[in-house]
Length: 277
Image (cartoon, rainbow, N blue to C red; front, side):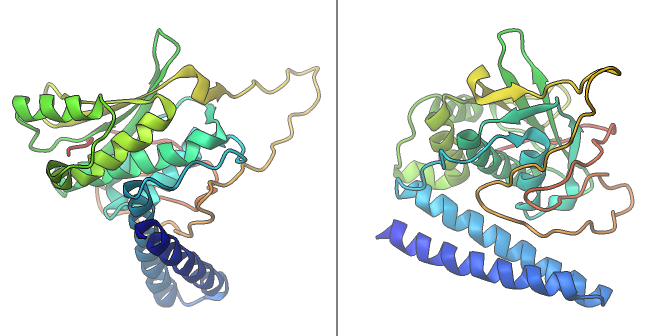
């Protein structure tokens, strides 16, 4: 019953997003366009809530027919779905693609962690997303904040909950975002750990097995054929129209873009951010 209600709402939200996108494409008044962008962003957040409801109902399996998606596009889409998207900052990402079945769920995991991170850290400080290759061939996505942190005993309890199959119990309602994260991670053998940062805040580590991503091939050399850039496949959720807003003074240099997104220049600035429960 819950899944059925969620699917009905998702259908309506997708229809709303299509209408708003058409209006955005033909709008030339900057003030009206800004208003449409705000409506678009609110509808995108509504879609994520309905997707989480499907997870709670035990539905919403991955789309196995989807193609690989560049990691940068996955991260940018996740950023576009959080409330404080203007505070998110991409620090450094390797040139890899996530396989289709995992790309959409990784996007949802990052969106939940980013939303928590921005809500648990000062408004003046950005939340950073970066990734690095580990020696065991895994890929570690890291969301870092400079917030108030989490007491050691509570942090251990949250990590214990993330390390086992999720159980929907009354206590889970206090950390519903992490319940969704744990459920999505279990689908793909992804590990999620919350760690205290040395100088304050929390770093959420999302550890992807090597089978979930592939390294982008290098373009051919001078004597090879010219490399032709192929269009990137979009995530299952479709286009997310979020034109670049004017950055706030001292704010992050990366703003969310459309769901299928073109590559943005990663920022080399500071790395404040992460996730709490």
